[in-house]
Figure 1 (cartoon, helix red, strand yellow):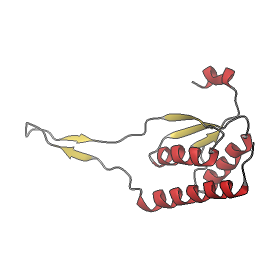
Figure 2 (cartoon, helix red, strand yellow):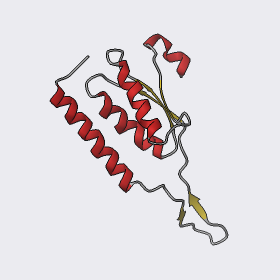
Figure 3 (spheres, helix red, strand yellow):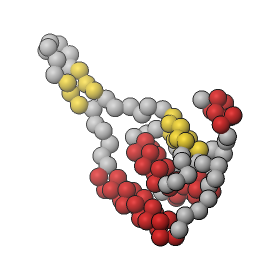
Length: 123
């Protein structure tokens, strides 16, 4: 699958802008104290990672779709499994290399090459 080079360049520019934004603005969620009706014990709200997120990525904006879903989840501590469209499987491999180069090299982001029949094995 392909797209005109100007559209591909535009998509990559959007990805770069998105990553720059998250890189400069992201702050790890901090526990916060909640008001309670009694003074005996304090109550806190703490944010924890959800777990594993499974992305099924469409073919039309593959890089942007992956980064917009995966990056916030990775920053919050979730693991991301990403299945790119079968029409552009190299997008997933390239994205995995990008995340590894950015420091997510402990398996936090993984590209999986599967088809719809194998979905039950992943879930």
